[in-house]
Length: 119
Image (cartoon, rainbow, N blue to C red; front, side, top):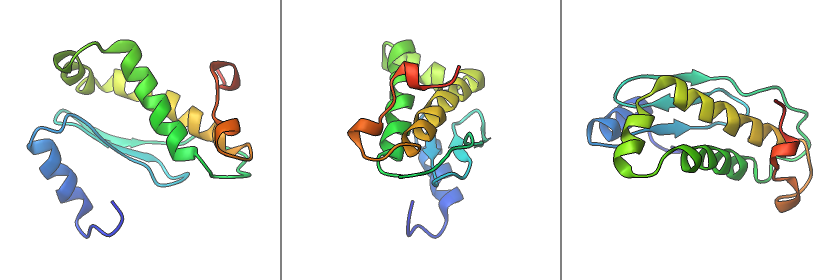
């Protein structure tokens, strides 16, 4: 969203035109999320930041892992993306992936496995 002057109206336009879910990250700041049913923010967990390389990749990968584990087609995704609790659960998992990644040096070596994540 870097360089967009009217972020909120841009996101609203996307959602109004059929985008099921928009997530916006900004380092360690809360995640912003929007769908046609709800919007809000979700805090990032505390992290011992040593290297931010791959943090965004870990967040996106964690989120998509959650979606792929629970959703089998477009119609199911649309329903899922409008379920507040399901989206928050996926965002929570994704933020833990990002927080785990920034606590290690490097890119690939820093990406977490399930064993690396807090319960």
